[in-house]
Length: 375
Image 1 (cartoon, rainbow, N blue to C red):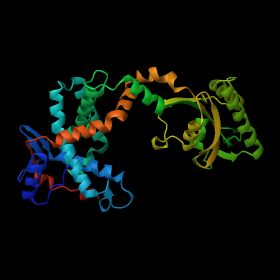
Image 2 (spheres, rainbow, N blue to C red):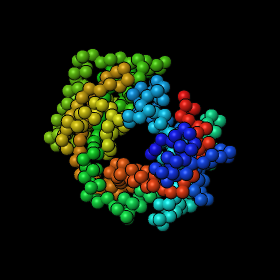
Image 3 (cartoon, helix red, strand yellow):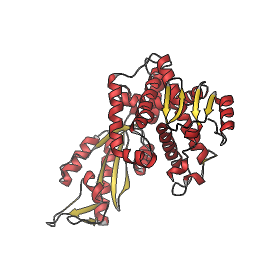
Image 4 (cartoon, one colour):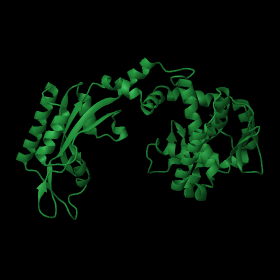
């Protein structure tokens, strides 16, 4: 990506020499770039400015302050945003080229999905995009859902099982087993709830999550367990963990036993196979506990439920037992491919797009819109 000089003549020269891009001055401000009969509307460029601005907001040191007064990747945010928006714009031409080179085309189903996604998202944010920033729905559909669909299709045709450069199955399997966790957990609140009739009980894990966000509500009061009750509750789960680790009990049996003793109706065991991280919203206590366990082991720890406390029992399973089933799931497989080759592919697309010749940039149009419009 290159900076576009403020002067039109300098911009044209720099673009022509460095990017193979011709700049022009035009009274028609409805388009941002074109090559032959293919034209990118100015609304698509504005949308990319908007997207890049939000990308920058997630990377600056303090997103509560002016984004443009800060730096992103060592570059002033305004230049970073503008260059990123132009990169996306150039990529549109490259994606069409690659689709043609690889003999790919959008199916009727994919085209319908693009339109459905555009309709759904437009209902959510169309008013803002159109009224505040002048982005037409057709421009959004091209720059957003259509871009993403073509990008993903080319990626799959490159790195997928039948792609031109397929990722070896062993590499995919290794990534899954090194980064995913197969686990189960039971959680019990260390407090009692009371309904309006005055009856008290220990909430189920699903009920306690919402109840603990406040001390009480109009129909439910919360009473913290006594020290003796907490000690007994934690000892029960500690005993469960020891028995699960030794093979005397399964996690499901422990959950059922707790459910019956507590007089609960809901299933108490939660199971999952996923990449667990606090970045994805997983509780820090759960992540830390599972990281400390070997396959087949169970452990316990105290956790926070809003303003209250709870006790967590977690079990870590052998992830290799899930590998074959998980990789038959297309979503999991595609997620792993993206993790393994996403950065490489993005760099390849950007580099190839920057080498395209014959792209004409409408400098008057693109210079009319700057990142400051989003502050």
